[in-house]
Length: 236
Ligand SMILES: [Zn+2]
Image (cartoon, rainbow, N blue to C red; front, side, top):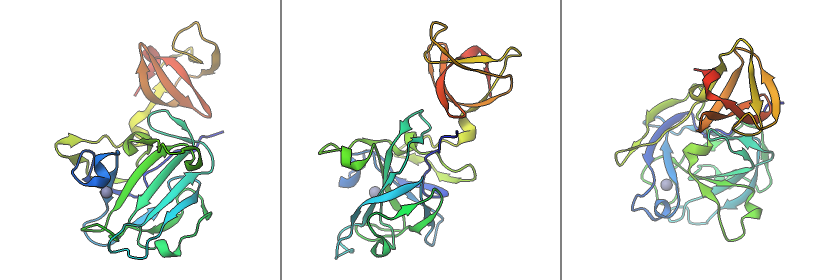
C-alpha cells in the first residue's frame, strides 16, 4: 500500500509573499502566496484526493477574497513525515462561483485557475494548510507551514523561494529519497534504537523517504510503513 503524498496545487512555484509580512492575512498565520508564470493564469490542481468542505463566496469579490477549503478524504504523507488528514485553503481562485460544497476531486484533477479577486495586485493563490479535518478544529485552526506539509511536483519549476531574505525550503520527493546501503539489508523499527520492534527488513538498494534525524537514526517511509532506521546504512 502506497501512501498518497500531499502536493502544492501549482506547478510553477514563484513565492511572492511569505510569513511576517505586514499584510494582515500573512501576519498571524503561516500563509504563503505563490504565483505561476509571469503572465497569465496558471492552472490549480487538487493537492490530494479531497472534498470541498467550506467555501467563502462573497458577493463583492473586489473587496473580499474568495476561498475554497479542500480537506483530504484519506490520510496523506507530507515531506516532514506527518501522515494524517490535511486541509489546504486556496484563496483567489478565479472560478469559485462554479464550485460547490461537497464536490470531490482526485489528486491532480484540474480545480480552477489562479486569480486576483479580492485584495490582490496580480494573479496568484494564497495558500494555508491546516492539520486535520476542519470540522475537528473548533475555534482553533491548526495552521502549519505549507512548505513543510506539501511536496512540490517532481517537474515543478521553482522560480523564487526567497521572501524578505529568508529562503523557503520547497521539497521534491527526490530531495528526500535515499537508498539502503547494506548487503545484509536494514531493519526498519518502531523506534530509534535496536530496543524497538522490527517492522520489516529492507533489502540493499531499497528506496525510502528520509524525513529527519533522531540522534543516529532517521525517521523514514517505505511502501506503506513509517518507522526508524540507522543513519549508517542510508545513502543518497
Ligand atoms: Zn496572501
